[in-house]
Image 1 (cartoon, rainbow, N blue to C red):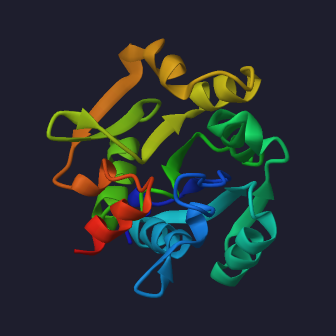
Image 2 (tube, rainbow, N blue to C red; image 1 turned 180 degrees about the vertical axis):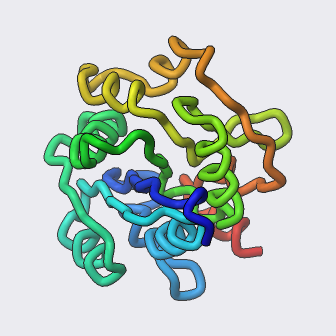
Length: 198
C-alpha cells in the first residue's frame, strides 16, 4: 500500500456491557466471526498500522480475543462512566508524536474496508482536519481526529461528549461522502443482528 495511505493508528471502543443485547458487543459473532475481529480486519485492510482496543466489561474475554487478533488491549477501569472515558483511555495510550488517529466503534462491524482506506487517504490530503464520513447526508463512524482534538479529549472531564468538542471546531471538519451504509449501522439489540445477516 502507498505510504501516503498508512501510518494512522486505529482505536476501537469496546468497553460497554451491551445491556440491550446481553453481552459486550466485541464478543458477538456473525457467521462465526466476532464483531471485534470484523472491525480489526477492516482497519488493517483499510490501512491502520497499529490498533488499540479499549475494553471494560467482560475485560478478560475481550483481552484474550484482542491478543489472539494481535492487537493492543488497554483496560478502562472506569468504563461505567461512559464511552468518553474509554475514548480518553485509548487516546492516552497513543504515542504523543502521533498527529492523528482513527476512532471506530465495535458495534459498527459492517463498515467497508474501502471506507477506512478512503478516510485515511483523505486525512493525509487534509492534515489537521477532522475527517467524518457521510452517507445519505448523515454523519457516521469511524472518524479521524487530529492532534489538537486528541489533546482536548485527553484533558477534558470524563462526562464530556466528543460531538461537542468537534462542534467547537467546525472549521476543522472535513466531510467525506461514501457509498457505505455501514457507517450508520450500529448494533444495539438482537433484532439488529438478524437484519444485518439478511
